[in-house]
Image (cartoon, rainbow, N blue to C red; front, side, top):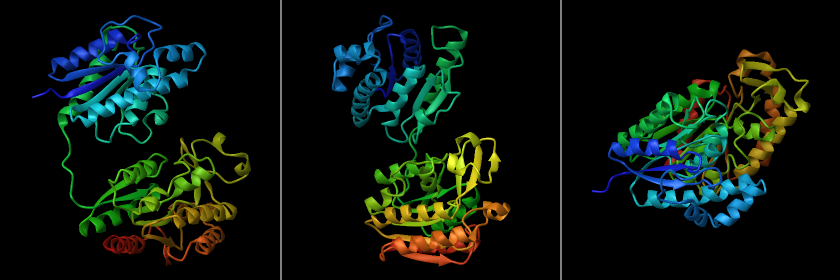
Length: 408
């Protein structure tokens, strides 16, 4: 019986000694380690021969070491890293498809983290991914994005073996082995429904979850923080999710106004394109989120600011913005190939309009309702409920609507 394989990716000209330390630890625990060198060879000699040398990685990336070195000399590090990570991605995907790959680990500084996590992001959800990084204590969103990557701070620079680096190297090796040893979760045969939520709409999401699970469905809730909605839509793309209740569509709003929970221009389009049944609600669209006051665009500087927490600053979406949002949402939903419906809570979109009078703006809400209805194609069902999004009856109606849509 073949040993299970853990891939070790690194710039082996600069992190060879430390990579060998991890390799030896993992191999002592009865795993096979496949090493991939994504370095250039500029800054050091190899400590051990990799299974996939940099020349082979560059070739898999559609290039060669002559071009790689030329790119480095001309300051085009980003292009150089893109080619090498492309090559490593192809190799890792081939190993995964062979059925032997059970985990991936990498280590590095800024460039090493960029390389390692780009490779990890291309691999499937559920495959253990561990990145030991000198920058893991900062903003990790660009590196993790929507994937299940575990980043471990290296504390000290990964530059030689000592009591500090050996400790974090050992912990990183232990983390990937522990996750690999835990095995895979047995998947349910029930249809899976994705639900988005944010803050004040959580009770509604939990209520819908309970009701749909009582009717024979499995549900998964995504935090609509910019990465959550994208993660849900990636899983729809992969065929993992069979229906959605898009309760919190604030990620569409934040994309329009450069907010904190921006999930990109394609948000709220994937389910429609794939023909997956979708029920849409305007949860939390009555506000725009910024990570700090200095991130607020000039056009909104005069507006009242609600400080939710040190990292969350919130503004009310006024009538003009609500009209813009409605038109964008209608355009997205009109493209849908599958069953699509909208449920509108006429008395409010989030907990904020209940706790802060500055957010209670019926005129702006009405403008959204009317604009959306005027711009939606007739095939999109619209259900208006004279309650607040946080009311129990709203969740009851939403669960019943989606259940009927799923049944056909």
